[in-house]
Structures are given as C-alpha cells and as structure tokens.
Image (tube, rainbow, N blue to C red; front, side, top):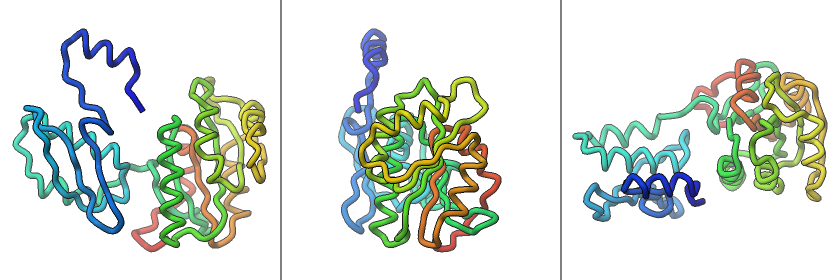
Length: 239
C-alpha cells in the first residue's frame, strides 16, 4: 500500500528522496529459487542480488533493511550480512513454537494492522501448501481499539476456522464484546467463542486443538506477551 499522504507531503517539503517497498525496492521469489532483492543505489541505478531463505523474517522488512544498507554508504560485508538472514528471527513475529502443556503447535505474531494480517494469512497459506499444517487453524485474538479492526478481520476471514475472541488489561484494547460484534458481520465465520482474558482463550484453544491443528496468537504486542511464556521454542524441529 502507499505510504501515508502526510509522510509523502513531508518528504516533498524537505526535498527528500523516497524509497518505498514495492516501488523502488522489493524481494522477488519464484518457486524454489533463491529470493532476489531488487532496489536502487544512492545514485538511483538499479541493483539486484540473491539472498538465502529467511523463514524467520518478513520479506518487506528484509527488503527495507537491505535498501537502507545500500543507500547508507557503509562499507558492508554483504556475504556475512545476507548469510545471517537464514538464522535471524524476531520473537513474536510469525514465531513458531509449541505449547508447554499440551505440546500443540502455536504461531505467535504481533500483527496489529491490516498489512501484517495479510502477511500472516500468507504465512499460514505457505504452511498449508508445504504440508506442515494439515489441520484446522485456530486464533486467539485481542486488538487495540484504535486500529483498523474491520480490515484486520477481513484479511483473516478465509484463513481461520475457530476464533477465540478476548481482550487484554490495557485501556486502548477493544472489548471482547465489541470485537465479537465486529466479527459476527463476516458471513464465513465458522466458530467463535468469547473469553475474558488472553490466558483463558489460549488455554482453551490449545486444549481443543488436534495434533495437526495450528493455534495462532495475534492482534497486538500485548496479546502475544500475555502467553508467550507458556510456549517453548521448537529447537528447529519440524512442526
């Protein structure tokens, strides 16, 4: 999507060059081939180079970081920097773990805007297509009320099988009742339950999950923080 108009206007006022994902830089990946970064040099010339797979990171974030390094003027050891991508990961960002008690598979994602929810849906599709997830998709969801909640729900509508709606102890958080009301307008919703806390919603989802299911925790940093301690790292084992 385009940057906010206010940001574009300020850049124009300051006579700053703009580098936007999807325009000046992006990552291209086709089939099983290595990802390829495309961007611009400080002089505006086209530049491209291959990258190793980066399963723990979002493509747009990697693309932006690479573009920033290219135009920074820093003397960069590109091989060591790009090799590090294959092992880099951000806790709570599309992080695959297992529940400490039940052992069910969980995916933690602090996604808190429509763009991040679209990326989350794409990640789930990748897990399904690869055969790593064969069962139902369950989500524990609490969202801040000042976000574009409707667009976030729209992005996930066709992805989720079971919804566990809840809230966190944060003044900005949308109440579980209101979030449930927003969700009820989506005609494809299969199953939905409301809970008074993230912990209770998470525990219910994990207990109800079958071996092949995936439990997602998303909607805000607060949502993920409330339950991450109840899960364990997979130690690189196949989920």
